[in-house]
Image 1 (spheres, helix red, strand yellow):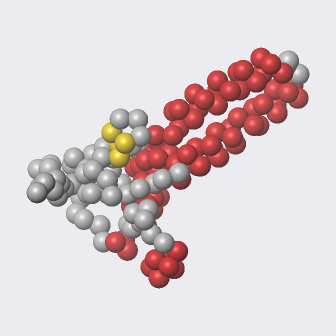
Image 2: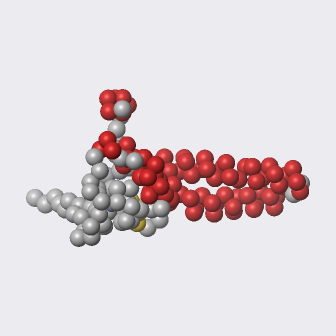
Length: 150
Ligand SMILES: [Zn+2]
């Protein structure tokens, strides 16, 4: 009979960290800001992300379990929303001001959007993880859970 792989619980490091936050007392803005910096939404010291888009299972400083939070498509949605709101006004202003030819404009716009999305996506994912952490969401809730828990 194969043995099940046992994943050890998250344990905090010996570094002093802020005391645990009560579920109702989490600051949403602070958690999002820490997430945007790819830091743990609880302590702001440890890293919340690993690699390009991976979420660390545990914070290396306070031991907060972050790997259980599943952001799914939220970060991609918000990243495209932000990048579009940056790129479209620039394109419209360039068109109104210089009337550039279409092909080079599209080439520059596509490369620029790709670079912008590439740089924004990991930070936006950290921000979404921070938001979900602050709201106590894991990403597997169904509509009834959200209505019951506010
Ligand atoms: Zn932490």
